[in-house]
Every structure is written in structure tokens, then in C-alpha cells.
Image 1 (cartoon, helix red, strand yellow):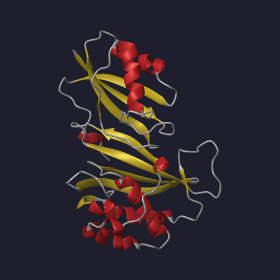
Image 2 (cartoon, rainbow, N blue to C red):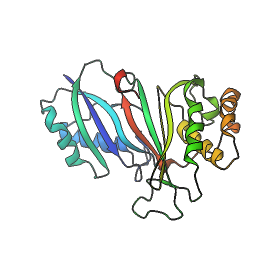
Image 3 (cartoon, rainbow, N blue to C red):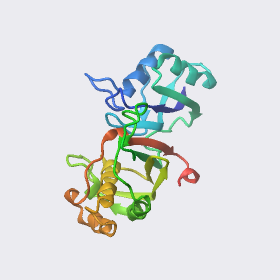
Length: 250
């Protein structure tokens, strides 16, 4: 019996998130279908996290156990043969039999991409969030630094979340520009439901002077969702990296 760790990437445009659902197409359903085609049965797949409808992943991790003797080098190509082109397996490795993609994860990095342009990019519909007004990147970068540290992030958690512990540690947070893309990048040991999207919406509020940058610490302390900004749309959000080694964390 081997425990296999897969790293995958996918566009969320055509999917109702990662987790399998009865009446909607999901990334997990596609992965399970491909696994069945390869192994003749569907192994128990453990995922690093969930992504919502329309959210993308540059790096998403999952593991499963199998007694198949297919070589580890052939597994990515085997999956990709049966997967649609908007889901790709880009690595496979054998890991400790007790490894769990979720519970052994030390942290994640997310990106939120705003297309800062008056016009949509027809080749990136559903892949970025258009924001046609000027963005003060330096101001938003300084504002984003207030997220760093260990805090109760109740103000940045969607109502209705069943998670009781809202304390998370943010390792790094920044905003940078790449031509017309303004990119919010944040890494931490864990994230609450819609947390990054609410942070992105809060940064937009800072840009529009609806919230001052130095008010963010008070918003965090308030533990009041109504104090933070809007929840930014899902299609600008990417799970960018999954950390399993401390030296990878940035």
C-alpha cells in the first residue's frame, strides 16, 4: 500500500468548487472519476482544503492510498489523460503512509487578482476581477501589513460559518502591481470562510477612502463582520501554494 500526494492546478470557471456535490460539477468529482478510470476503483481522497464556486488553484494538494503498482512517474500523465484540460496534475510523489493533505498542511498562500483596467480582458473572463478605477498600490500594500500576526479574524469571516475558533496567524501580506494586474498576496497557517475575499474587499474600501488603513487593527479587534469591507467576487481568488515544510513558508 502506497500513499500518493498529488499537486494539481485548475480553473474554477466551470466548477462549483472542489467538494463533491449531488447536483453540480466539481473538481473532486472529476478527480474521482479519473482515479476510477486509472485504478478500477475510487480511492479515499483527502484534500488540503476546499475552494468555492468559481475559485481557482495554482497549487492544490490531495492524497490517497492505493495498492496499484503503476509507477509514480506515470501517475500525472495517467490522470491528465482522463481529466479535462482545465484540471491538470503536475506532480505525484510517494509520502509517509500516515500523511494527510489537510492535517499535515502548515499553511497556504492565496492570491487575489484585480484587473485594474477600464476594459475586460476577453481572454481572462472568470479569471480576474475587473476594477476600473485608479488603485493606490502603495497605500494598499501598507494597509495589508495590518493583517500580519496572530489575531481573532471574526471580522473577516462570512456569517454562517460553523468554525468556532477564529484565531489564525498570517505570515505575510502584500499588494503589488504587474502591469494592469493589482495582486493581493497573503499567506498564513489557515483561513476562515471567505476570509481572503473579505480582506480583498476591505482593501478596496481603503482605496476608496471608505475605510482608513489605520482602522484595520480596530476592525480586527471589533470581531464584527459589519466593520470590514465587502466580500470580493470569487473569480479573482487563487489558492497559490500549499506548505508542508517550514522552509517553504514565506
